[in-house]
Length: 275
Image (cartoon, rainbow, N blue to C red):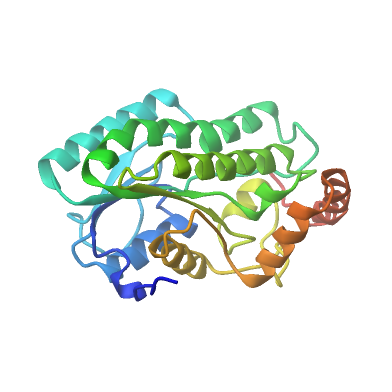
């Protein structure tokens, strides 16, 4: 078994991190921890909001982008490429497809437009941005982290579109990693459970809706993700409780898992917030 490098060395070979959704939650924690681990690392964030993080403007570069719009994703990718050619022309690149959101309720609640936008952000934008930047990663070397979810391992009634979108992210990432073998680029699917972020509020749920036994901080998720990246893994489920949960979900018959999951998730209806 190879010896895993200490966390302080994980990002030393990278010159740049390109990330989506770095203004909050897991994405923000990726930037904050990455900046501590490598004082020379340059960040390019694509999102609608500017991250409020205490690092210099030269290191944190914001590219306004609505990931639900294919045209904006393409423009953002080209702007990032041009920026890197001029300012960071060498070094490995880490692409982190972090942006994503959910919705809770009986499909198509809250409305069909919300469901379709979720598919655009959670799946299409991830595939599009990866495809546009993959030639750059192949040329310079690097890695791709795609943030999926423990919801990827079973049907999720009351969050049907969200769970299915994360199943896509997981399986697409694993397949991509196999295609990239020998290219100098690796792909990692990160599957966090409930995490202390803004996700639940945007999905229409009160803070505290996540089961405490399965909850983790975004900082813990990021640290486990980077350790998995250093180990050359293709998939990581963060936290042993989430590992046990997803192991059962992946082995049991899907109709049974869907029924049991529906009963659990139905309880969240008592914790919805006004829209």
